Length: 290
Image 1 (tube, rainbow, N blue to C red):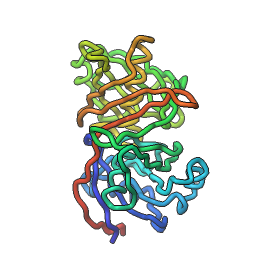
Image 2: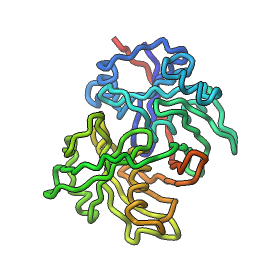
Image 3: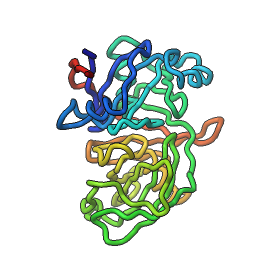
Image 4: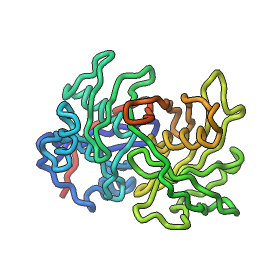
């Protein structure tokens, strides 16, 4: 039997499995069954809590930041490996703190290893904030066709440690009309796939110096989720890009599972983007992987 904890960040839910010494080798099939909402525990993905020194990918994290003791080994619901998860890393950090495996004192930072590099997590007014690092326009700007819309829409490719394509919609009615029961079609196809975000600007877009948008997302390897942290960051970046140089650097993004904050700020290696929001642990149990 393997112990697990269930957690979520604005409805984006995860199975958390502590494996400090890297003794557990989860197969694609095991991950998919565990995440199945009918035959398993049910989740959008799995967070394996492992020491950076106990996983091959952790070597790069320790080279980047020797204090990055813990590595977030994240798997999508279909068992595929993902580079990064913005909601997941906040839940991961909350689990470390609640389990006594790490501390985040006021004003201090907890570095966590990921396949996208080391990410720094701090406390925030709403829970936790993660510096997602330097972002960039990916240059992948496919046309996007999705069920529920009769017209193909252009997408903007943004990389925040994992790939995203953001699509602007005209109204909340269009956003509600989307049928995200299957993956949107991209033209051209992206070899590694991408998370696809559909966004509607607020009315007005900026209130009290803060940008406001609403978003739904189809996550690569998962399907539609109630929230996607990196997708929220990509959405805010895309809307700021479209709005022009007078657009704010602070945003609130409404997703079906709640509200998340995004902040863009300068750093030595270029502009970074940070994501803030809640993280909750909801129950514990044991599961037979056989």
